Length: 339
Image (tube, rainbow, N blue to C red; front, side):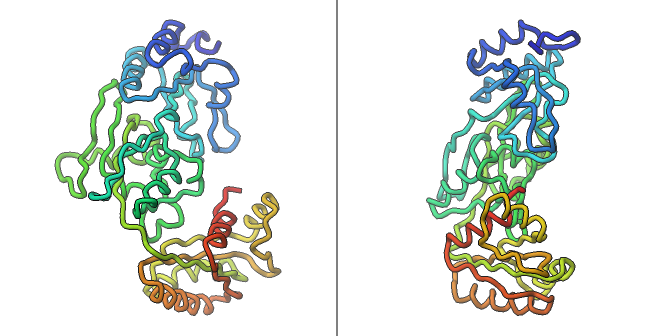
C-alpha cells in the first residue's frame, strides 16, 4: 500500500485514526481508487494520493486536518474532479480529501434572496432548485451538469453568462471554512455589505483549495428573469466574429450570455455527438451565440433585432433564432460542450 512507502509521512497509525474519525468505508486505499482520484480533467496527468478520505462534516474535516497539520501530511481538497487547471491533483501524495458526501442544499431563503449549500452539490442541481422558487444563480460553467459548487468556489468559475452577471465571486456572501490547523471559522457575514475586517471570503475564492477547505457556502440570488431569447450567427471570418462582439457592447447592448466557437471545435463536437442540428456550411469559420433575458418580451425581441442588425455589418451569414426551450438547450449543449 502506498501509504507506508519509504519516505512518506503517512503511516498505518494515521489510517487507523482516519477510520476512527469518518468510518472504515470512507477511507480508501485500494489502488483502483487511488488512480481514480489521482486525476482531474487536466490533460492526462495522474498523481495517485496515498489515501482518499470522504468526510461529511466540517468537524470530521477539522479532525483530519489537525492530524495532517501536526504530522506534516500533504492534503489536497477535491470536488467533482472536472477542473482543467490541476487544482485537484494530489501531486505531493498524502491525503486526497473528497467533499462528494457533503452534497446537501441546506436552506433556500426566498425572503433574503440567499441559499446556503454544502460544497458537494452539483451546480446545475443548485440552479434548478432555486429556479423552482423563482430565483436565479447565474454562474454557469460548461461542466455545470457535473461540477460541484465547492469546486466553482475554488476556481472562481464563470461561463457564458459572465458578460452580464459576473462570475462566482460576485455571488458569494459568506463561507464556512476549515483552516489547515483544523480551526473552523466563517469568513464574513450573510449580508450584501460587510465592511468589517479583512475580506477573507474573496481571498478564499479562486485559491484552489490551497488556503482552506470550504464546508458551507452562502450565495446571494437574484429574481429569475421571465424570458430569454437566443440566436446563432455564423461568420466567414473569425476576426469578424471577434469584432462583432465588441460592436454589440459598443452599440449599448449587454447580452445575458455570449459565446464564440470556432468551426473546427464545432466539427469535433458534432462528430462526437452525432448531432447535426447546426449546419456546417462551407466558408464558415466561427459561430457566435447571443442570448438576452429580462421581464418584457417585446423589449427583448426589439433588442435582438437591433443586435442582428449590428452583426450584419461584420460579414455575418443567415442568423438562426431558437424558437423554443429544446432548441436553446441543444445549441448550448453543442456550442459549450467540452470537446
